[in-house]
Image 1 (cartoon, rainbow, N blue to C red):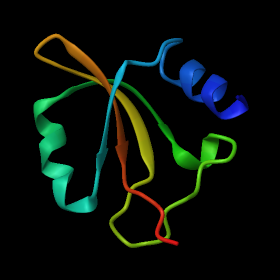
Image 2 (cartoon, rainbow, N blue to C red; image 1 turned 135 degrees about the vertical axis):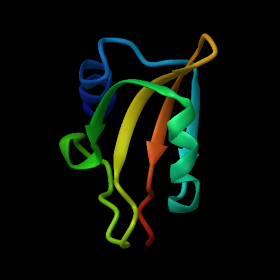
Image 3 (tube, rainbow, N blue to C red; image 1 turned 120 degrees about the horizontal axis):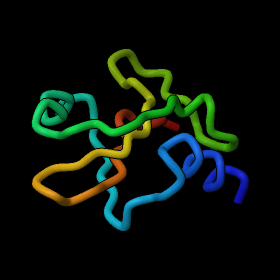
Image 4 (cartoon, helix red, strand yellow; image 1 turned 45 degrees about the vertical axis):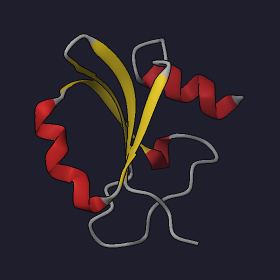
Length: 78
């Protein structure tokens, strides 16, 4: 619950209903989105921090053609 609250607060008080997880190979896709706000995984309690080079570890609230979404950039490898 603490993670969701911190993520929601960092991203402007609300979480979109749609989410995308982008690996490092899809970073260029972000140029098409309007990024409204973002936060690093390290700032969210309980989120794993990516340790692989090129995985940014950022959560973003973004908009594309009127559709709001949560985008997770980079992921942790276990």
